[in-house]
Image (cartoon, rainbow, N blue to C red; front, side, top):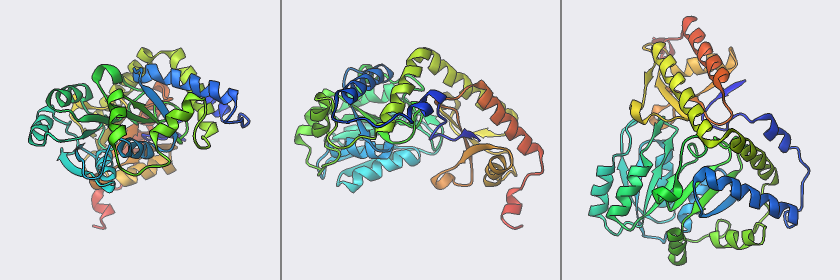
Length: 368
């Protein structure tokens, strides 16, 4: 199966092999060296000298871990939402008692810095601003550098960024941009299985931790940092994911981040150009199209669900469908992580073949 969804992504053979390593003592020196090496490998990917914590979780758990360590119930939070994952970030904050102001943008539209400034000036007590870098539900890459700059210029709010589907595929300059908490995951551009949330935490975020009063136990940063200093974790880590991350980071640094970013841009452009030639319509504004996932409306009369079913069940290529209000309306092509030209060429060829074959029309799908 040619897996062309936004994640989890295919694994390189070296990473698959690493998953077969025997278990080790997570309280011993071998694990301590492994964890140290992984953190050192992640720092250039995120362009940071900040503390990095590796938590046994999906990316969503990482979002929760970020919020519960910097907020108190009743804190005002600005959530910039432009898709399903921005909405999820906002829902988590609300679940822990934050007063969430939402700044919502239509599907395919990037977050506008000017409107963020307006919101912050109207609510100067805002404690944190929540942003999703690459919104995989709509295929938009939001302008995080510009957003972070105006947030810092107009408030004391922390900048929390969901980089789950962007880190490792496109540049993310944590320290240069002034990001207080970056959250990413193992299962996308980092070419590893699901199971690890990775957080980079600034000094400002650590200061916020000292006064934050949202209850926390498993996600308590201070515990994770205390044990990390000793080369351990407070609770049993997901050892196979550590093995996989270690192998994947070796591959990432061997290829080189500039080459990786260029590869993702090339494959994204190929996906956008070829699909539009086939009659698909790009969902996001082209200048904000993500290098990790392409979101498309199918040609007129083509049923998105049936197209995805056909390419998966009959042709061996799996695309993703829409989420939320976009369910049944779009298809999404994942081109991140362990992916090369031949993978995308094959997927696009299959997509073209599926369109040439008799296609189930929307009217037929509705029973007309």
